[in-house]
Image (cartoon, rainbow, N blue to C red; front, side, top):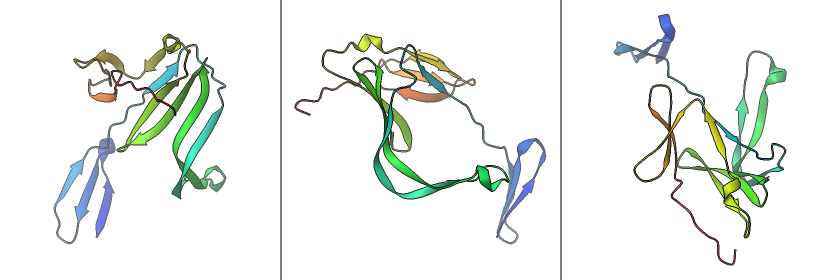
Length: 153
């Protein structure tokens, strides 16, 4: 048996089993991190790639017309031409959202400019971009030092 009881300040009391121990637990903290492509094409074509098995449902509020059911999920989402000769690909890796900029031969990677809100950017000792939330907890790390080149591909 699992019981949830409303407590002040968003805390929840969880009771496990008959005579089980209970403890007040604070509501989880959330942060919103936004990344914007400065000078990028906001209307770049988007395409979902590699359909994954299963679907998901989003039940928002009490109005079934606002619900989205049987929504397909994909391995990758790509934006073509966010900058001249540069595509952006988002994908999941170990439960983390990651992204790659794919730079075509001859394209200038110096076009890529990002701005962030909801976090403070810092460069760590390995040259990676670390974004910390308001409480200085790392919210995201971008491996800027990682680069590769596709040969014949």
